[in-house]
Image 1 (cartoon, helix red, strand yellow):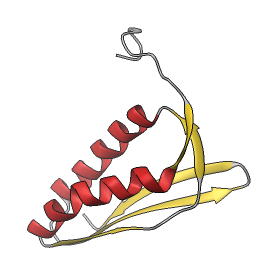
Image 2 (cartoon, rainbow, N blue to C red):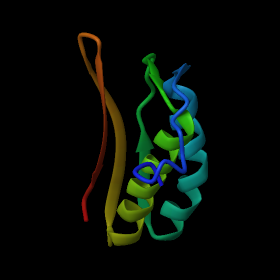
Image 3 (spheres, rainbow, N blue to C red):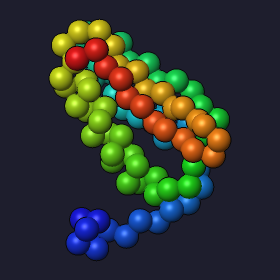
Image 4 (tube, rainbow, N blue to C red):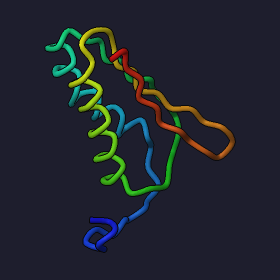
Amino acid sequence: KLDAGAVQPQPADFALDELLGSLDAEFRLQAQARGLALRVRRTRAVVRTDARLLRRILQNFLSNAVRYTERGRVLVGVRTRGDRVRIEIWDTG
């Protein structure tokens, strides 16, 4: 949709922790039902991006992590280096 121009990104500044908190709430029960521990690390990072598109990307990664991890855990964390932010999703699957 991005390539076709059907979706136009609308970047804005927002606290990344709010987005991660809502994803935690969305996926925690699903992870628990599969016997997985989901841990989302808190962050103070503020980013400038399209929150809706970033949410879709992270939902996809988390969905796959929960779906394809047979046992163990899924970890969501944020690393900052200077003015850069990197969101990481780790799983044991």
